[in-house]
Picture (cartoon, rainbow, N blue to C red):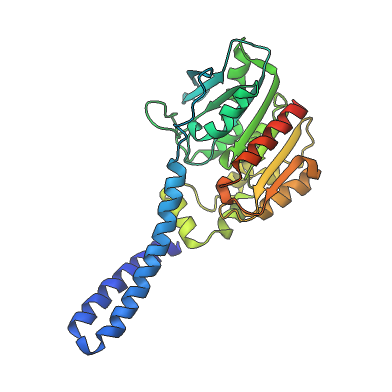
Length: 313
């Protein structure tokens, strides 16, 4: 709510100081100084917001791996929403383990190519898809992205149903990796789905409402612009927060990765998930730096993901 009034106020004050500096030249230096300070604040926060937007739009279109085959698919969920996705493989070997990859809020499946391509090289078949309301045309999935409860509690199960329907995919050896919203997906509905043998949740949260309270005004402002429901009511929050799922004992391996300086999902979420799951250090990975996108840590992260999958799947 603060962003709704704070940013317009700064803009108005900047214009006002320009006017006063022109009308009252004796005090022009003071007005110009105040104007420059406010303008500098606007540039600082504007730069952060633009940087976050560019991070969401980043794609790894430059990756080349000639043996890789990409088969696009679409299917309709039980509520009529059409989902777009793709299967990455190198051959028709149906015995290979399958990895389901889930992207983050306001993102798209191709943003995971720096993770999924190495998995294909290592001998896995990969299935990824655009969450409802996510992606880019002509492969944008239908539905409303704000229906996060359906994304987490319904869609992931039906995507796994789709994998099971494919005779060329080994659903007996099925693991999953997810980032941000994808991590939420795997620690809620995905966590309860017995067909997933291994889930690796990266930069995943614990309680959505607590996360929203932790954000400074400019991050709240950014996510409001992307149509995220802020401070969801209790019933909705229970459907989308791992906090209310992880107490259930299930027969699967869970691994977590997080950066301590994550500004979107604070590190405390990782610690709470680790505690409630009673995970050993062997099944967790934390970085001092890397923020929400594991910037600069991608090589180590991918290596650890492959190690976990080779060990547990």
